[in-house]
Figure 1 (cartoon, rainbow, N blue to C red):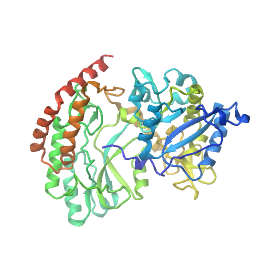
Figure 2: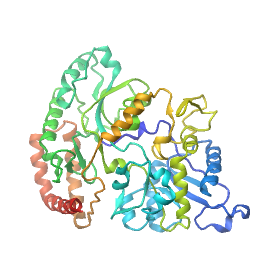
Figure 3: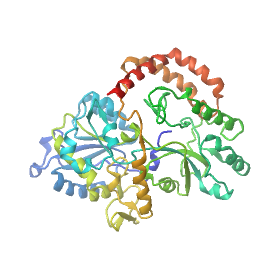
Figure 4: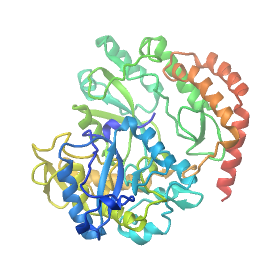
Length: 484
């Protein structure tokens, strides 16, 4: 299941900041002559503008000018519009300097982004050296690095998350819950006492999770195991463990533990609504266990892991910043990214707001939030910069930070970390397969359909859609990747 951005966007954020003066994108006729020696870089970000963004940016640009010799003009594009608008900007060749990456691999292959392989170690050495090696390897395209990734949840782990209020109310123990088959005894108790409560927060996008990594995304069935034999590409619906979990889901559905309209309902069961008992979530090291889930829900959430901790391409490419290949200020842009990702004053101003109004520092690296800390007075952390230099809320203990770092070190890397499948030879087949999956995927994963009846039927249609050809093409490219 894809990670929910809700947990990362603890305050809805991002910002459209139009500075007086020009950007480093060719508008030299508008530049104030008095600032001609300080380039202003145009930077596109994803999100919404805090009401005090001019103040935030003024504070940031003071440091940016001192340390990188530039100022930033940050223009934000809303989440729902970002993909479309950035596609137009990139394809039209419109000038910009820095941007939150969209369609990273494809645009890098097209030459839309500057090659940062040598520039980052040279001009962003301090921030670059803080990156986990998975970020570097996972973002290489044809052995070159085109992105400066946000250092954050470098690994992910799937969990069952429970509303603790119901666990306490009915004295339920989840310490032995390891898989889908362990859920029924819990559901039986809660269903009897809370008949209107959704036991599982399902919906059309709900997925049964296994120790696999998806080659394209989780709407297409192509996967590789993340442990054991990692050399073969196959369909997750041919995986024995997945089939068994789908049978369990179907059994739960038939017994009334899963909503009858789970495969089609538009009800998303928001994290903050007390309408569900258990949900599937994704966690990473900077979630500090269940802390982020609990904060976002407004009540205590307790989880148990059901997959391993794995560093995947989807993690290391979650938030990348790129520099346009047409930018006249590529070195300066790298220096600016270094400041964003290495200067705690800059980073904490952006993600918490103005010090003294929204927050105050406690000790060396903790913060106390003040009354001025409101959703529209700061940006979010996941898509801004280095999470390692963001001061932790005062309720995060040194033990939690130590555990975070241990987990990062112990997490394994996906065997396809950095593997970039090129679908050119099988585009038609992939479209056909996507159409087949749209007919069956939601029904199978929510337990609505019987997997023993549905999977054979689906596989027959998949073969007709070109499944064999696509698997062979992916395997050929993957074998070459492994050899290299």
